[in-house]
Length: 173
Ligand code: GDP
Image (cartoon, rainbow, N blue to C red; front, side, top):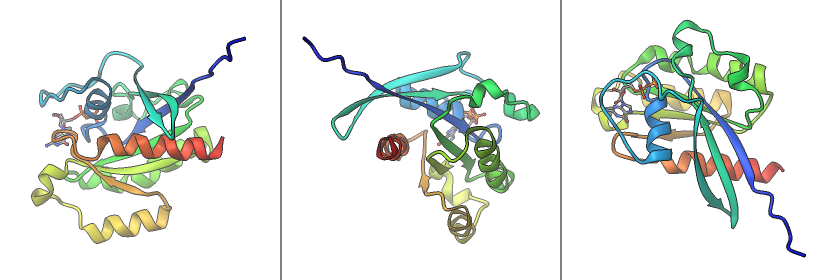
């Protein structure tokens, strides 16, 4: 009899202030496209991508906030059953950096302790950054969450974020 392969699916929530690059990151990772045209939502609940991690097939399901974060109105359905989280801020937006701790709290309140990463996006604009790297270091140490510096625009480190989360998730199951 043929053995049935149960594929692992991981729901990943991607949170952070508006305009930090969350939708762009989801589009880039799942569809391979980037647009500079400011676009609030991707119009669907989530996009997915199949990857292989430690010889296991994993289906990464990336959930978009669909702009709900602007009104502090992210629904419980958004967080429900999430197994990993990405906390995104932009190198060009100090407020988005200051909000990271609150975002982590929100994810933990709704999902408990799940693998998370902090993402500093738009590093292609690092020369215009308004956030001292020492501050970033201090925060990641305080929150005990690893950081990835990404440019969705130039496709730097995006795959690594989700590969890391999948690995962390598989470690605990
Ligand atoms: P969201 O509101 O967090 O989902 O942010 P969006 O994905 O809509 O992105 C907001 C704006 O930032 C858009 O104009 C994107 O093209 C731009 N953006 C996203 N990622 C990057 C990046 O890595 N570098 C640069 N320079 N712009 C980016």
